[in-house]
Image (cartoon, rainbow, N blue to C red; front, side, top):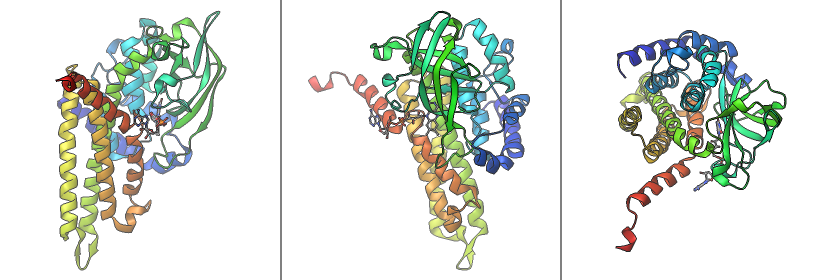
Length: 382
Ligand SMILES: Cc1cc2nc3c(=O)[nH]c(=O)nc-3n(C[C@H](O)[C@H](O)[C@H](O)COP(=O)(O)OP(=O)(O)OC[C@H]3O[C@@H](n4cnc5c(N)ncnc54)[C@H](O)[C@@H]3O)c2cc1C
């Protein structure tokens, strides 16, 4: 958090407090944030912070993108899919886009006129991305895409979806490619916004591509290199998971300290009870440790030194700790923790998804274990 990040975080926090927090209920009811909200966020400089000035951005870094998401979760919920838009989709364009692709898509993504999504998951392929079935078949003027994608964040509102599709059947992970799909193209439909147990305001949708024709220039990056591109990009997505976890923990501890000072039982504030004090002391400590852990990972990312296993550790441990802290904080709210009168209950449910998306925590542990196996290769033979 250099002075520039701090300033941006303050702008973001004020914006989310004034413009997002009051709309939480309405967005939860409709299953997505208002389109106009994206444009307002763009107007105050909260979208695409990493985009260079020549493409309409402020020329910042991932630290700036993360400062925005951190402010969001310290003030409001997960409804606004800015982590996917700015932290994922824009970075794929920056990393693999041609000059033409960047000029076409980046400026409207910075202004909020174009909303981005990425579609990897399918009804029968989540953790196992090599099992993806969506096909891209060469056609006269480009490619024809056919398949179904599920759980796509920003899915029903997106103008641009990066679709992962199979271009080389029978080649497993060596036969996948990425396509930039304009959602106005014929054959692209939003089947439904998925009804979830939490993160109600977040637009999580099922999409169908039924013979969607895209031009040759819709291919993003090299043909058949989709899988290594995903593997290159996923560590950053996991960093966003870690940052949102820590921000939500900080908010939970803050809300709970305040609540337990106000609520009384047996003639004193709940905060005066030793159990409350010990629980909050532990939650604050876990949050402090997570903050340092995530800060170190951000530093490493910015130095180009955050490997797959380290990113997996951040995503797994921070999301798991988030679940633990939220659960303990909710308990201190008693019955009110289980109501919608206070945000803590919603935060507790919302936290649950963090252990599942962005690569489930089991998959994270598998990645960490694989790096251990590589580090200790040959040990069994000695
Ligand atoms: C709110 C939300 C938003 C999402 N947003 C997006 C998005 O924007 N784009 C997108 O493409 N996807 C998105 N997803 C999908 C998400 O990434 C997948 O749900 C996740 O990767 C898990 O895949 P799955 O649901 O198919 O579960 P499965 O892969 O079926 O896994 C089921 C269980 O088996 C375990 N498991 C699987 N493989 C292994 C293994 N090798 N070892 C041990 N255990 C294993 C898993 O950990 C899990 O507990 C989103 C999901 C949610 C809930």
